[in-house]
Length: 153
Image (tube, rainbow, N blue to C red; front, side, top):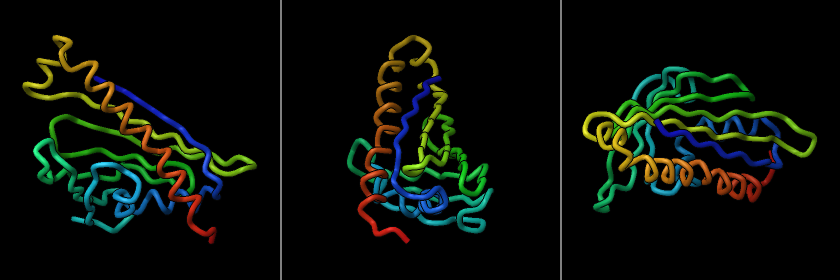
């Protein structure tokens, strides 16, 4: 298993940040490698909603990765799991209000499966998986830039 987290302070109220994160179609605006997102089933932004992300693969082709919202507490937390791909991935956004804005923590965990799990146990993928996850959660800095450039509602 690999785990990474990153946090930023966004100068917006918690509900504005929460609603932006809850709309998974915003992911391509701040997540590198996410090309598009569409709702597959359920009601947008609710527990149980499933989205299909198209992400950039190594060969340059888009690869589907389905994402399910597993928890949605308004203004406080959004948890999700990736239901397709090379490993079991779970993560979440955790929000807390501060006088100058909203602190957002983005956490991800991945458990490699199949052939990747074997290589991971041997240590071949451990450092690479950790580096990839750390890079992924660090993109939260881009969310801060995107949200703070938008006019406050």
